[in-house]
Length: 474
Image 1 (tube, rainbow, N blue to C red):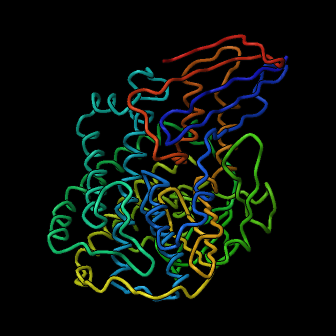
Image 2 (cartoon, helix red, strand yellow):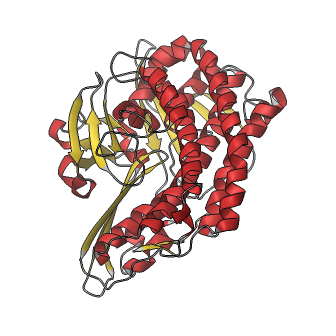
């Protein structure tokens, strides 16, 4: 008699979701699904608003990666104006994007995933959190907190506030970092680089101790999509799209992000509010692909900064083709944090970062604009249609987490098949299923937060829906 195991909610992610694990008549896991159970509707909320208000409005989409939405929205506005953004403004935008990458990755690794990695997948749930990490290793936890603080401080200095900064506008930015801000940021660099050395050296041996998790929690062939420079290096603000397959072969290169709709499609399923993007030439669901840190390191030729390049070369040696184990999102995240710190230092040493020529002004010159950039979780697209008065007629937001949706569902099912024994459920089994999702660091509703421990309810039901067993953590 078939049964169903429900994990609700999924913990230590941004937003609200549940996981269903379906059990066949033989008592084995037959399938699993990752359900996103909230709906926010930002695309509809945009309609009728002046396009120049969009960056400020879009910064409210997410409390963890607001900068990405500000930048993608501002770049869509740049296209509507038809202007060339001043070089100094581009550098201001790049600076804050690197800062956001740093703080968001620090949150994901140190606060949300480190409890599993440092304390163990089977450790006591009441200890398996950032406070448990702080108790076990105060210095490590403190370094994670400081790294996030560093990123947030840069956003505050450049963008005016740490959460939902609205300093980006069509044509540039509203203000520059200033000499005092530059000098303060430079004082953080040595400590930040030291903390990254500690974190990376700590993670590598932990990975060696988790072979079963690495091989069975999201390890499968997919495409990988990311933005690169024309030369093929890591790029987060502007560039072209490259797609590689699981063997590391280039499937498509030099794709214009402005033409994303010609090669990316979006499907939907009745059991989730998040869409299912796919690579059009391979159809749905065959065109599944991954974005984010793992994809960017698989797609890019090099990082372009010395410390990150050394780590990236070693990272690529973990596989003969592309690195397909989703568990390695964690290591990729740390390498990107290191790269971001190096780039921040470069920008702080560039005299143009203090320039006041930071905005180009013009009237509306186009009725359609697309902006794209790399968010912490992957490639982000904002696509706007306006009327002749500059009022929004339609918006399409292609979010990075959505682009990982097919892969996340595959990871949940693979993990459940390997680790969940329906006849004898243990909390550590289900934590591994949740941890498979945490590899991707999904951002479902970053503006909504819970204080303390979220409730966990696990229900085992038969095919008729009758409740057979229930575990609850309040």
